[in-house]
Image (cartoon, rainbow, N blue to C red):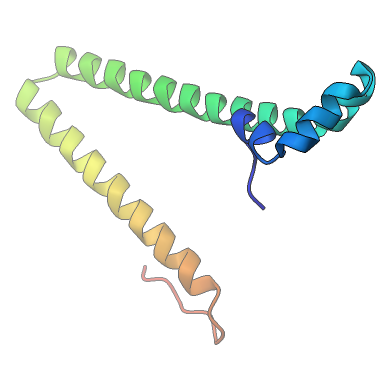
Length: 113
């Protein structure tokens, strides 16, 4: 099911439907349009929250890396940051592969020690 956005809340209505809604009492028009508008608003808030969270995570990571490079030897700090980023990417890929494998039928596979 697709989540409507604010412009989509009105784009699916035809001209006749908009004219009919305009001719109704305002409280009836609100009742007709309110569910679509609330769904669009909830979707907009979810997207905004996700963007804000990603921005905060990136700024936290940048501050942490800057502090590490200021306190430690720059070469050692850069090598550590490279290793951490490589391990996090590998962990993400392994997690996606494990999620894909969990849907398969058959005996569970043992993980390496």
